Image 1 (tube, rainbow, N blue to C red):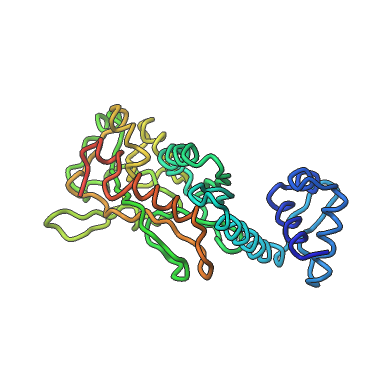
Image 2: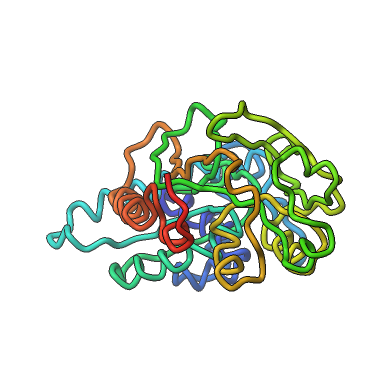
Length: 307
């Protein structure tokens, strides 16, 4: 049995979640999928999937091998596409990861437009605030916001994320409007759990040195939309990306404060796995998103916020 068929069967089982669905995807019998996977495990000398009566899950070696196997199949698909006479038409799969709130508010509409322009593209989108392992989990690209900690990844800047400190009109009527960051010590804060308080509550004015002032944190959440909803409910002040609260600010549900002391902006980046030729469809998607977002994205332009 050829190695390509075995790799194809293994990747199909992982991505579809079952042997039956993998068989449907490949157009072969379920028994053939099972046999190909068994042959692959025997040739490697390791167990790739932990099987039970109803489910299967990747073992540690299986998770590592899946990343490599998915890359091999993706590279082969890219090579085949380069041989197609109509090389201007993009086709094939794109596995993309992005933060949840950015994905829902800004990335999804852009991806919908991209897929309308390229109808032969198949998208596998993972919206999650966790930092995925691109190689082990077989991602073609991830969108990351803020400092890039993994120096082995290739990166391209897609745009700029700015921040707003804001609260509901009701909260500000009850507790007063802070005039400078130092007054936040007398206020209640809503904290994004995936960032430290020092990262979240840092401010820089035109003349003053950067400062960190942390309010009394009442609520922590690992999702920016949950914090924005709590702010609208009058539960405290939130310091959050404008791509989350632009609509709430425009509609008056939240009010921006401390505009002269904004938290420093950060980059929005596309990151790619190292050590492989980037598929053309990934390059085109990155170009599309960079043109869509840029240094002054629509959500900031609408609020009059800029460099």
